[in-house]
Length: 136
Image (tube, rainbow, N blue to C red; front, side, top):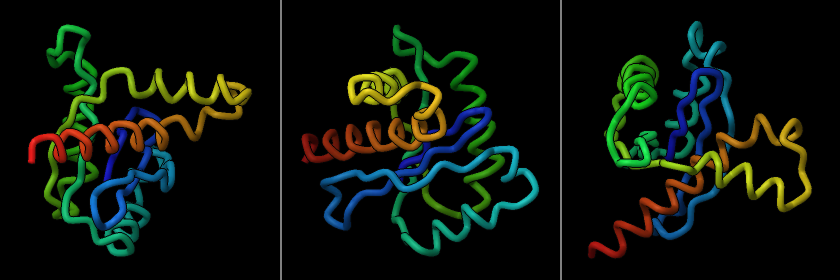
């Protein structure tokens, strides 16, 4: 299961059981999760992932910066209490790529806004899956 955590939204994606194809699932509002983590709990119960892949926004130099610190803090607040094994994976440019995908499909950024995080989660989860297959 892939998680794209931002200040406003948390995009979620999953892979098929074989770990080959990532698919978008949902976008959750972070503000709503502050008082009620049940939507996240339900996702974990419904999909029963073995692993959570959290997108870590590294700088173009491949280093962790302020955004990465924020993602780590939000992960500790929302995901770690769920008991799911988590790994961080470089998600550089995944949101930019998701925006480009919508633009090319003729979808305005305003209409795509809530979906970008979910597509970004799908893109870096797919990259993670592909990377794991390459390492085998």
